[in-house]
Length: 87
Image (cartoon, helix red, strand yellow):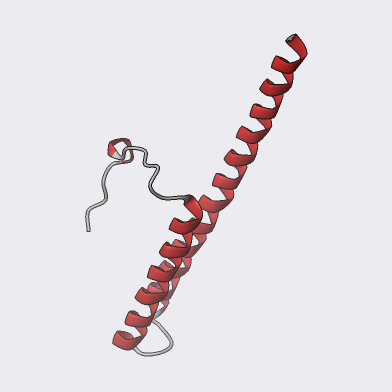
């Protein structure tokens, strides 16, 4: 699997972040199931750790997205209030 460079990815309005998060979670669950079928239960430590790390990174992305969304909403309200005060 070859990942595209971050700079090469163009913005898209066809998806929302919540949908992407849940879809990525389902894919991780499928991968975990396939690995358990291949290696047996419990998973070897390396594979289990990699899945856990990927899950943690997804959660960090969601936390950052929510923070940015909150910051933008605050900035929008401030600009809206400033415009309202001028008129």
